[in-house]
Length: 248
Ligand code: MN
Image 1 (cartoon, helix red, strand yellow):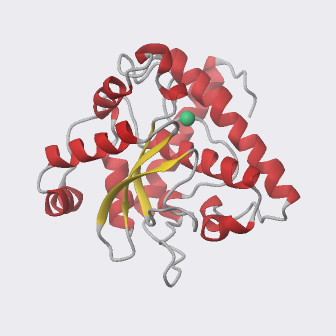
Image 2: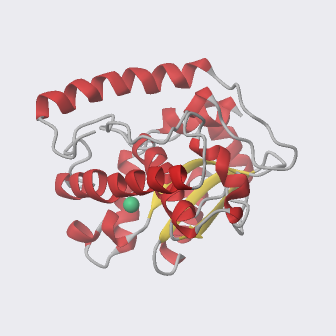
């Protein structure tokens, strides 16, 4: 996709993506399950090697995440990960018709370029979908019950998740994920790593990811990562997170 798309084209593609994401969420799991490897979600959350259009406009998450940050983040940072991923995947013989997450369980066998850009691309594709215009609130149904069971309360979950983001030194991600024992866990990874990677300290299937790289918040929040995380709860797309949870 061109880095400079017209607004009309952008909105048209965004509308199509919204439908695609919704349908994919409803179809449910045709997951490719490994024995001990974290479960990979299939059609419930297909992420391929191409960058897909944002499912909303750059300014949709205002005032919590500003339009300029979103535009640069999506069209520069994330676009670069997708482009570099395809270069590395081609050079290293990866089948790009399959979900990108298929390579994470053996990512240690590939180059640093592939690891960094596969993580960068996948993490951002997931991140965009974890947010929406007029988001926020609380999860419902089975996910709400599981969060209460695992973390005692939604507020306790939020505190623990925010701490994971705040305490990640340098650049990285905070995650809500499900481990191989089907338990909800919170953790963080450095750089563009994620819990699906065989070399990650935390292992599982990510449900919700928060980008705590400075490029995600510096223009509006400067060095105040805690303020960015605090505001971020207002744009959360709990429906999407819940679809991922129920597809496992
Ligand atoms: Mn980012």
